[in-house]
Length: 86
Length: 257
Image (cartoon, rainbow over all chains, first blue to last red; front, side):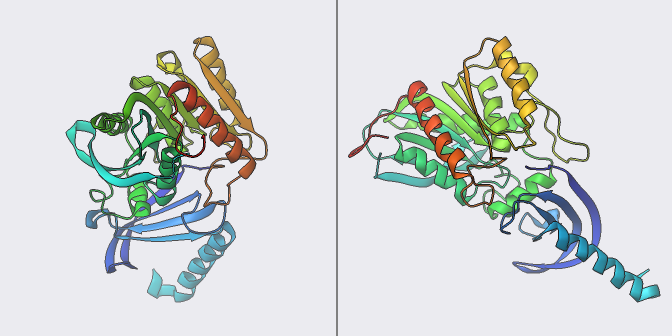
């Protein structure tokens, strides 16, 4: 199934895409059929800058289990960094 | 079956007169050939969709696929997956724009001497809903809805898609409809397919539904894990029988379709 639910947030940072580094403006997260991963559904992340065109995009497709583990890792890394990550 | 085909990118005049790119696959021969507008799925104007167009051409149809993500996809220059992501982020393809782009793609067929004038549409996934919308909006001879979501029912809370259900407009349907659905799909669910069938029945429309056990959404997609060969093989047979009846099929060299 297509879930159609898309979470979108503004982000500040950079990503490296097919044409090199670019500044990010937004990130999207949604569970849907992947484009490339050999699974029925994946947690898909798009890191984008629409102002720079549709190709300014880094796409990631993760299994739900690995996406949850990634969330845990991100939170753990931020926690460990203490003041530096506030 | 036609073994000789021409498949190429063409420019067509879409919604509000904008020239967009489209993929056209047509059989070699004098015709007359019926036309099929192929509506791509949410992942966009991709390789899998062009394969579908070539399959129709091999079966004696002129198949045209308008790039519905032309505008978000940097004028057709962006990769299909990037264009699809940009379209998703923008809330999907607006209905009015879709109808204009498809109408322009079908109008393009009129410039070919071998075109019979008969026009059909087929769509997959989000394109299934759009095929139904086209059948409400354009003078077509046949329409095929392959597991189109939100013909019945609204998108779930939190979706960025700006689409509305169409079932209340079933009375406006202008041509026979073939519907192909997986019983394990959630969008559309079997209950939503039931609701659409009741609406078609009540409106006295000509339709034919086939539902497949063991198949969910996207069972025609040969490059994805949801591919279900039994449902897809039967589904393709139903499609060619249906289009054969309503659009006419011209036998190709060597063998019949």
